[in-house]
Length: 253
Image 1 (cartoon, rainbow, N blue to C red):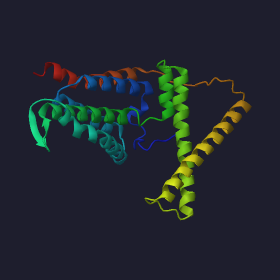
Image 2 (image 1 turned 120 degrees about the vertical axis):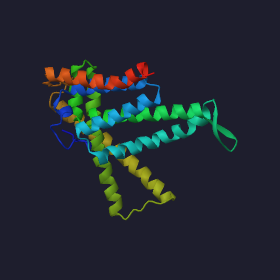
Image 3 (image 1 turned 30 degrees about the vertical axis):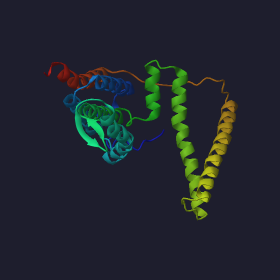
Image 4 (image 1 turned 30 degrees about the horizontal axis):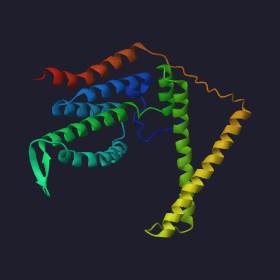
């Protein structure tokens, strides 16, 4: 089974012992309620709840912050551009271009919403093994082909990553040093080409091995998930907690 870098330190945390369907449904509810929020303060509360979920699940903070940093890089451009692209009351000007207060407010809301959802997904989904999520999706009625595609993608992304690392190590063993020149770009081109060729060869070997084992185009999941009363209570509790910011937005004024 694959191990994620975000695996919780405490393997017996409540969010890891429950049925994986609880994690998936709770993540869906949390995301839905976050999308319905428009005001800054309820979104800030949603962000705090996302952080608390990570505290409960025992997520490794260093790995979580690394992934949040990658997400912030993606959000940075949006947050910087939105105040200048939304009409409204002028906040400040740069080179004759006005930044509006309404645009800045929207940018802040989007930033809070995005971070809250990412935190919740890290706390609820990233701590589970991908195969468990696949079993959970099957139990929830997702299309079987989609589940197989998900599980095989997760499996072979890791395999291709290992193959990529072997090729990189071979380049380093030949004293390759990247620089801004034609040799570097050509070397990376060969690297990508060899990775593609080896991926195709490996895929053919896997298909041949599966046919030798009688593969007929069907994959079978042997899930033994059993929904318990404690799972219902946990899902209810997580849903009610996620509902608090929305209630604040609706009845807080």
